[in-house]
Image (tube, rainbow, N blue to C red; front, side, top):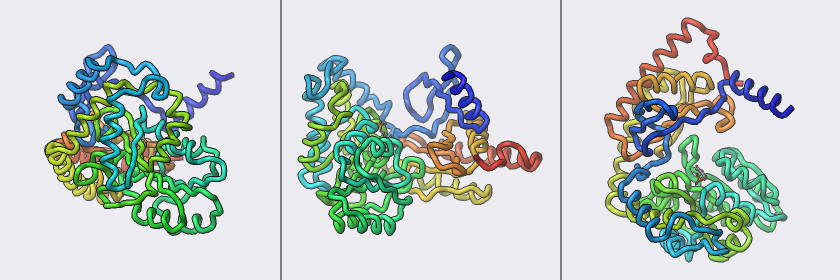
Length: 418
Ligand SMILES: *Cc1c(COP(=O)(O)O)cnc(C)c1O
């Protein structure tokens, strides 16, 4: 019975062009990456789909720091943080991160987690207790959605970017504890939440602002300290989550907030307590990553990224206008080209791959039905020539699909997504 059901679900996914397949990378995360089946010679692809915004994931200094960390502390932590797994490397990392966020969150402390997914579950379940209300932005990341589902708090959703609706919801709420929950940079759209307005609302309504800066930390701000530095926001009411597997190039995440909040998480957050601490070597490597982000190299990389973003947007804007597609309003390294139809997004992705370029086709349920897209992400390690190559290939792919559509107006890729 179970297998019958799964078989049918798989057939339905296939019919809707929604089947997901993993690809195997044979080399490090970098603009040129070899990808292919286990037992075949991989193809080298120019990739525009990682979240390695600063191009640090394959940085030799980080690989060396990881090796140095392993020599000092071994491979594994051996236990959870509350038992015996909390190492000096974790503690040093938390001190550094707290200092980075302290200008925005006075006297912030920081807490390191194995993954951003777990950090979001931890924050929302530990603070979203019975009697509290979570006010959740509708395009929040899956980990925030799951955290809200697990929490005992009431959950109210507000439409994307809709500060006015949120204000009405907050004014109507009688909850003792009100928590506004939002991505800072939306992961599939690249736009930035109206954080100043959200913080003003939090202050006006005695609420707190939980913000997930997975795509801002390292990439935004003069020093790379993230969206709070970028926007110059300061408040004790901020509960900040940064991830360390994207721009920081390694793995893990952290929460920075008032010391009482951090102590509460250490004592009550099950996704923090009941899991083995990340290898100390990972925390040790992250110390080097923070040096790179804040140092000259980070500044050069962010400046290069900004130039590439401008170049890509100029080209994509023309292409979208010609094809009747939509280029999302984004100034960040995430640039969504919304083509709407699932099969069309796959056809474009396949046409690019035939030219040796890898761009992810993002389909429901990751994005809303009818908004399938190519999610193009840039890294500071890309070059101007790489971006030009992508734009040229996309231009050819667009001509190809529109010629095919003209010949067969009812071809599957012309149908609106279900
Ligand atoms: C990637 C991501 C996460 C999860 O972080 P991991 O460390 O990869 O588990 C959380 N929130 C957002 C917005 C993300 O993009």
